[in-house]
Image 1 (spheres, rainbow, N blue to C red):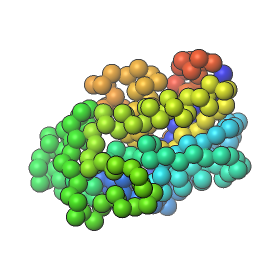
Image 2: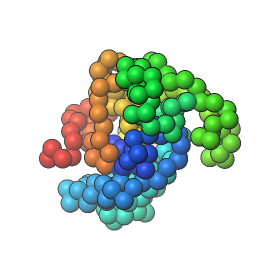
Image 3: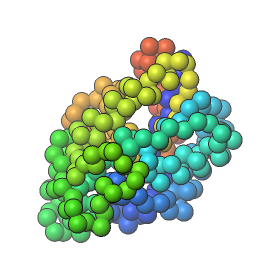
Image 4: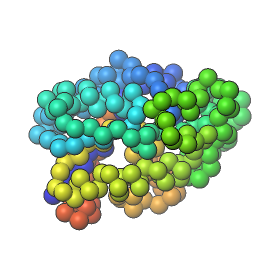
Length: 228
């Protein structure tokens, strides 16, 4: 019976500053470091052991994973990094302060951009300082100009099916350290959550979400580790 644990990275600098982050690569705050370490200690004390880990290509998720594994004494585990586990691309909102955008265009419009399932924000301007298409970690990849939650799920779930599910099917325990929206996609898929309901699912930073899976990868139980 394999176990899958999903972990949203610890607080990032842009989380602290209330800014849209998306694919822009920001580091953890000291509070984020503490959150990741706390998650690792919590899993260590509850006896969790993993065989393989997956994360995005963004620093805040990678570093969170390393901090967790360090606390667990499992830093030696193999880790696969893939852009398909990246956060949703927030397009032209990237780097902007959320409250300032509310003041500029109204709370309802910002809510639509943030919380609708299929509506994406305006595309990122090619001259934006937050453009990442020339970053070599994305060589050979068509970097999106913007993404809705639906778009994010359309890349995260196939990656889960192709790369992660086979590892779980082999009976191995897996830890995924990623982002709010890529993890929403995986949770939506595993727990069969509707399009309307998934947008309201909040995933806190640094809090492990555990799936106990059957051998056929059907869900036996999903729970927050804090609930144990």
